[in-house]
Image 1 (cartoon, rainbow, N blue to C red):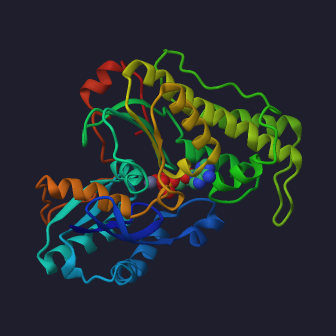
Image 2 (cartoon, rainbow, N blue to C red):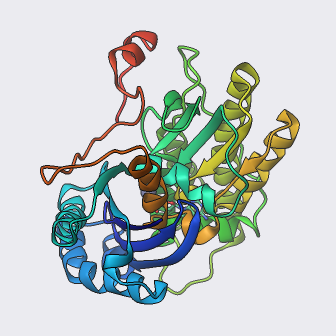
Image 3 (cartoon, rainbow, N blue to C red):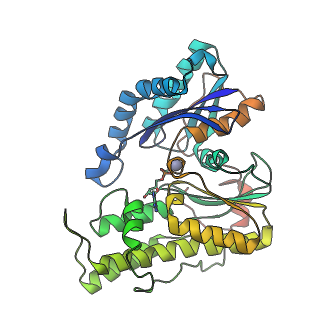
Length: 358
Ligand code: KG4
Ligand code: ZN
């Protein structure tokens, strides 16, 4: 069963053909990093225009590389949200038109659920209950996945997402965009114990993440130590490398300690770590070590499937199509589409009056 996946929620236009939900046949990703780089972040209006330019050739390329025709696919899966509305609408409108023209079934996929399915290509089947730590530029959530398709959020960020913290700290240090890969590279040559940052903990005792205080601590350190941001083309100093390593160590510790603590309580059988920040080698090592202590395997996507891609959307969509789910042509983009019980009354009641940025 071949499924075409389409992803356009942020700054990557992507299409992929996947067989039987877990065999990658082709995956094409057109990145807009060059377009947004000089602005230090994604500019939504420019992102929509780029998607419009790229969507047709990217889908055609995915079919060409797979060596199949559009008529060969069983159905189409497209990212419905969360994401930027203008970006989502490009992929969604194209997917609807294609599904209509081919008379094929269509399903909408939650982008976060897609990231969870990014591990199915390179790992043994997921054993349930599973834990899924999804860390990207827009999200930092730890989900309990009792069975396929069921999600319960156990921890989430109260402010910045982990990837956002990497990007903001990199910007502060004059390192460029996106910050995660650059900080990781510099951190390899730095001393992670050079600058002592506290691991963020919540005053109310809930096991949530928070990265904006850490970002402020980095900015305070930069100010007080008189550290100069790296100028264009200049080699970063040892002090910058030490700072990158110290910052990365705290982000990784915060994510992994909370995950491990909750895993001792909920006893999952698989630990999934996915999303753009899952490219980070220090996070992979720490999560694998935590998995070993817990006696469960840790699954990561291959690096090219850690950041946004359409293979993960096709994989998640295949499960829905197999379950008989069908979207109509009224399928609409949902910029704040939620997964599982995030933001429900049950979630709010358990968490009292804590306010979250969703
Ligand atoms: O999943 P993704 O492509 O897009 C979102 O859905 O947000 O994630 C992008 C994020 C960026 O914030 C980027 O800095 C971060 O993932 N990232 C990393 C690394 N590679 C990408 N963060 C830490 N270390 C990395 N190696
Ligand atoms: Zn993503």
